[in-house]
Amino acid sequence: MNNYKQISTALKENGIAENHNWLSEDEIIFITQKILKLSRAKGENRSHLPINKLSILLKTIKFQFSDISFGLYLQNLSKKLNLKNISNDFFGCESELKNIDFYVSKRSEDPVLDWHVDKAYSGKKDVYDYVKPEDFGLKFIFYLTDVTKDNGCLKYVPKSNKIAYALKKGIYEKEIKYSPYWKMNDFCELVTRNSQVIKKYTDPIDLNKFYDLIEQLKREENSNNFYHEINKGGGIIFDESGIHKGTEPRNNDRLIFRYIFTKKLKN
Image: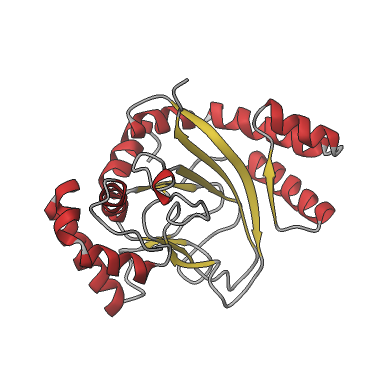
């Protein structure tokens, strides 16, 4: 799936899309070497790269010039791959790049991160400043190692992003009493308790499909409906407000880099 319109259509329908042929072999080798070098130099498995004048200035003060050059390289790569076109089409308006980072997830029998949703909890005192329905990101994950069911691929509940939007809308309109819903079970319980409100803000067909998928997930954790297996050089794009999980990288370390786009703020 290489056409950005096709990708955007899949995103709007299910909250997630795949692209299996994003990077050339030379790009895979170069980026992998840069990430491993930076990770070893910093002694960290994750790092944010500069994307604007302020973040470049902060990196300059710390003499982190390799971060600056690598960040610029990845920004140019995002333009080459037309990622912003995908993001603009998905959001239906102008979007902007908010983050570039990379992860080295060490080989493990534990999940990279268990079932959860993003943008679901904050330490801010006024939760209504945080759960704005339109405030969420579109994530582009590029894999530099093969990921499979048994080795660190992403799992995602289709259409759960639509339910998350309705939930946030209900909370924002103060029709649903907020409680933390970062974990999947908390999310599902909050949706079930407030199903009538959820139906106001999403298609009831999508809500019923969501219930069916959650029941299937409880019965068949290993169902292929949720896995996204990708060879190195490919990637996934997904609405971060949907329910997802990073599976166990059992065979080897998992290397990824990510872009996050959001709706562009109006001045």
